[in-house]
Image 1 (tube, rainbow, N blue to C red):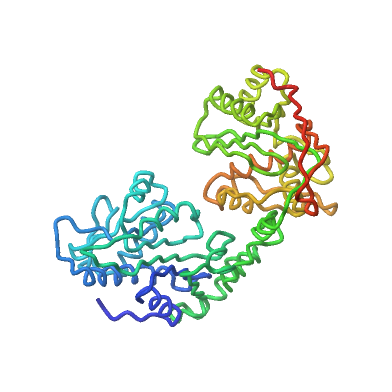
Image 2: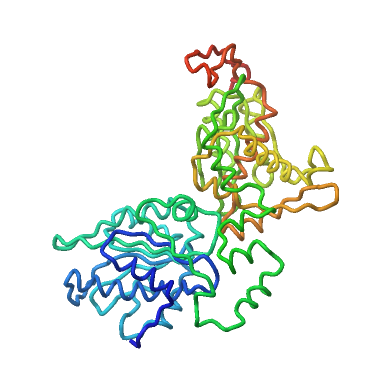
Length: 458
């Protein structure tokens, strides 16, 4: 293999990824910083180092040292793997198992592909790895990565290597920003790289970026200048900073309202059911189910478990059948059928009910009237939708859901169920009246509550 020349920033990251310490490195932050090249070169060099470290020999069954991939397997195959083939000499490796394994020198291998492969992800639970690398890691969820992190425990003949994690990413309002940039956790290092750090790019590459993203100033700031705050733009309804402030919130309510909210699934999307009390998620149920009777049954069970006669169901698609069934089973319950495409309550402020619900959620979050959502995927989805002002009166229109889905890589079903629940919650009857409630100044006071059980028949 010809001598490899790394940029100064690539060299900094490479040294961290090859030192004796356990370490996770986030590299990138802008277009043109040389993320893909570093990704490919480090994998090849580090696997070869581990072969020597473990004193491995060629074998018919090469030992697996780790995993490399992207969120989606098809994206890894079409982009990252093609870069690997282009950069790494063919006599250093071979592809096996329909390009799901990269075998180096017939001695060691890494699995490769997507985190969307359930069979592959299931194997992570029992795997013993020394490394993993995720390209375009801003697409991933923390829970997906946690399974891989737990697999870093490979030892061979009593020898323990330094365990390494590499994430390459463009700026995004995601878990990487929280863990590597906002408040770096121990053992996590961010190496920023801009196109100006890469001498191999054309001289006019900056102008190319300007032209490509001239219609979106936020994306331009992110991709040209590596600004991780840029995508918390003016047209982003809810930001991670807004959600983070909820960690400091101590909710106190004179009355209690409780509801079960459901966003039914369409196609392969999630069917999400939340039990919400005064802005706090009490229970979450994620289904992949389109049978209206089964979904209705799960909602009834959750209503009974949380002693509430209140439910809200998105009636677009199969939701109408679910709503009708709930009314049959619980004729005295308060079932709200929500159609997000209908006209908003104030046509001067919002283009439809969907925009009104999301604006309501944003207001509740800004005013810290809700609890911090513990589910990271829910937080990610809440930060995804964009809005625009459509007239001089300040009327708000939310982007089409398909646009959010395209940018997020999946449907924001959890966020939709949560936002709908907050919106419908305000219209529900009170569940519990508190004669006294505990304040921050009177932590010793006991709550005296009277449950309202009307409507709990069925």
